[in-house]
Picture 1 (spheres, rainbow, N blue to C red):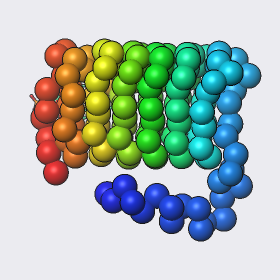
Picture 2 (picture 1 turned 180 degrees about the vertical axis):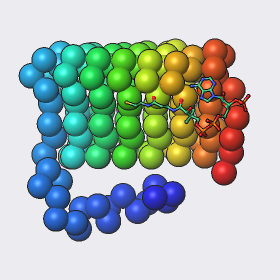
Picture 3 (picture 1 turned 120 degrees about the vertical axis):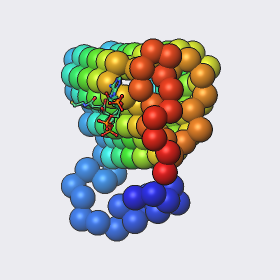
Picture 4 (picture 1 turned 135 degrees about the vertical axis):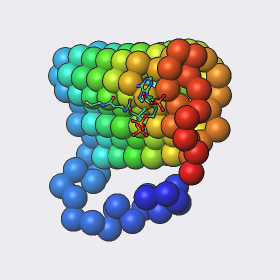
Length: 140
Ligand SMILES: CC(C)(COP(=O)(O)OP(=O)(O)OC[C@H]1O[C@@H](n2cnc3c(N)ncnc32)[C@H](O)[C@@H]1OP(=O)(O)O)[C@@H](O)C(=O)NCCC(=O)NCCS
């Protein structure tokens, strides 16, 4: 799905967790966690304070998320990613295993961050980045 405005079509499907959010009991969350619907937070994740998950995001085991970070829609974060504070992640993005995102970054929609990448500046969207420092290797 390339168009961020089409996420609502998922609501029309018969999806058992379309209105629910699933948070593994071992995840450490704060009281001010903001969640839309259809989000999954897996075991051992630590979303810290003032985090917002909009809709249909999955955060795989062992990820950390710093303060004031916003996840838009349909984002997959693979295991052990470390996402610092004040970050905005655009819809339909994938963050690879063990990637590191430093504070204050904006990742535009449809971005793929490779496993182990270290992201130190804003990413433009519709691209794949890899490496330390993360560099664009593909655009579409
Ligand atoms: C980044 C990624 C999406 C690239 O996939 P792709 O578009 O098919 O790219 P390719 O495999 O054709 O690789 C393109 C180039 O990037 C390099 N590259 C690929 N992934 C890389 C990574 N994670 N770090 C550094 N370089 C990487 C390749 O070596 C290749 O370099 P070359 O052109 O010099 O040979 C993929 O390699 C990746 O890291 N996916 C995340 C996987 C993951 O975390 N899975 C979790 C499962 S639980």
